[in-house]
Image (tube, rainbow, N blue to C red):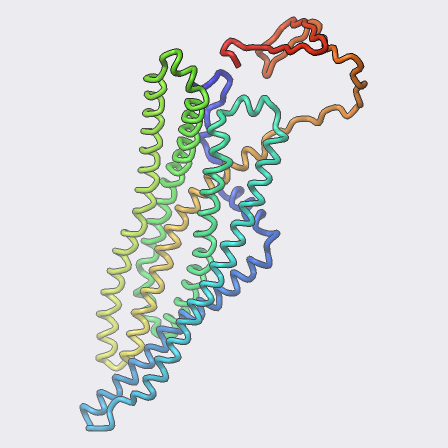
Length: 397
């Protein structure tokens, strides 16, 4: 059903770094909101990082009280002091959650404003494009860029911007607290990081190609469906329903396979990094128990450090997953930028034409074409006032 002269969908992605920089260029006009998002993220991360250390103080207080009561029959656990410590821990965690909620609210508004501006630019751009560009693009493919790709880009930015800021700051903050608590356990915990980075890099390289293919096939399928519906009468009259159904099945299968490969590749990061994180957790627990028994660390410090290892590995895993989601968003952004970068139609001559006096229109030996292939040659006709004249093509259009 693809008409002659239509170009196939784009199959190769542009420069990833250049596309990311261009996306940030769209965000710069909203720098106040961006600063607010970063500031709220910093506050939330600071609170969440302090939480485990405060809980560690409570564990030490309980441990000292229980040990004193067991060995010396002392007063036992000071529950008032433990309660005050836990109250501070609750305040810190509630503050972290509130700051994160406010950050998410501001970011959602920011992304939607950017997507609204992008839709307006694409709409205005389409109105300035020449007919040759519109005619060379399957309508479903063009609609897919305006709708599906913009929606996918908005979802990717909503999820990745917040996660990159929060998780990046969390990794830094947790690493500082880990070093303060125990340099030895920190070195042990960091052993798995190179393996996590290598895994993310390998999956990122493979998934980028698959995400580009996924959105290419999405545009092609939308184009085929749109043409089949708009030309339903012709398909039925000429008995082409089986052929159209076969084309749909083929394109649908291509999209399904590309989507499966993209989603499967991106989903590998989480289980692999979770396995590495669990292995790290076991080693830290064993070494920490040995240091507590030797008196080198307190039980509260080991408890806090174990929580820090969880806080440290989870952001790394999420960052790896966000990289793959960003790949999908950038693949959509590149398709949108191709429309925005297309050559525009030259403005019409502004010279005023004489006002018609009789309403009589005459063509003498007129040629017409969209491209180098002429569609009309040597056309001459006269439309007298009150007449209706139509030029009908071979398909009745």
